[in-house]
Amino acid sequence: MSPDGMERLKRAAAREAVDRYVESGMVVGLGTGTTASWAVRRIGERLLEGSLSGVRGVPTSEYTAALARECGVPLVSLSERRPELTIDGADEIAPDLSVIKGRGGALLREKIVAAASRRGVVIVADGSKQVSLLGNGPLPVEVEPFGWEATAEALAALGCEPELRRVKTQPFVTDGGHYTLDCRFPGIPDPPGLACKIKRVPGALECGLFVGLARAAVIARPEGVEVLE
Ligand code: 5RP
Image (spheres, rainbow, N blue to C red):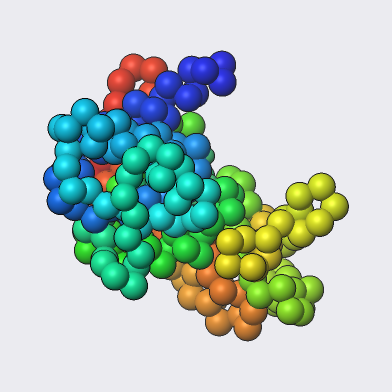
């Protein structure tokens, strides 16, 4: 599909999610990534036209915070308010709505905001993100930079090949000042079990497996938009 066609699908999913789930006065978690950005733009558009009012956003990254300001979406911090729900993208979506997130580099803050959201996360995506088993691509793990090589070794012992994410030659650094290890597993048949094992590795701050956090997924394909709840 052409890049324009993909953008149209992402936009359609985000638009449907905002129009279906966001109500006036709500505090909404604002995800990160190209699809989640369309949700921020849609909220801004509706605030401007007056069909929504009093919506405030909790951003999951500096990028999203800047975009929200540009689009006229007022922000509030997680210290002040808990979101009612979060709208966010995903890299892979399993049939039970377990997802992999973080290839866009914001997973730790995304997971904190998701877990703090009263009604969980609404995932927005194009149909290419649906998989029967998670693990088609790498699982991102956000790690403490100190001793990251030792953390990578401990993660490798769980059955993956970890690779430090880089921008050109330098390590990619998250908004929180951490590194990301992209861990290739040969399929992830037990997402909650693996998430628990990763949680026990010192230096691994959080992994991109979001299990039990998504309450719905809005998936756009050329034939139309489907809502899974
Ligand atoms: C960022 C993420 C993104 O939501 C995920 O990578 C999907 O991004 P996109 O909508 O650009 O495909 O998890 O950490």
